Image (cartoon, rainbow, N blue to C red; front, side, top):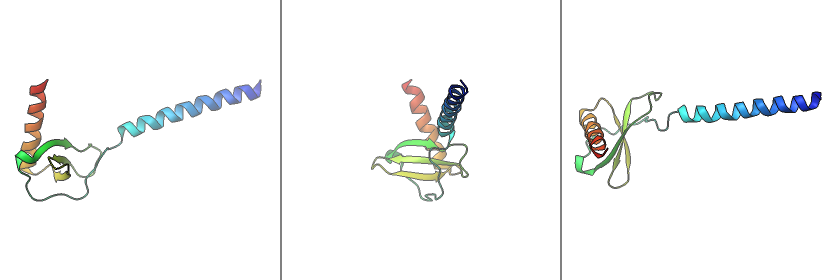
Length: 95
């Protein structure tokens, strides 16, 4: 009986650990930026603007371009803020 109880406890602990690990992965930052583009990307070439996770050390936007590149730009850059707002407005209009 003791061996069965030990196995049951082990399975419960293992299952709880696996579930907790999955939850931590969901909460972790997806993409953080450590280097930033300092130029300007023309609005017509921007296809997406995503804000980095709040746990990232540097606040940034990841800007997707028509050529398939993903470029990090600081959130303090005015044109990037405007591009983000523009993309957000477009998404809200689609809903």
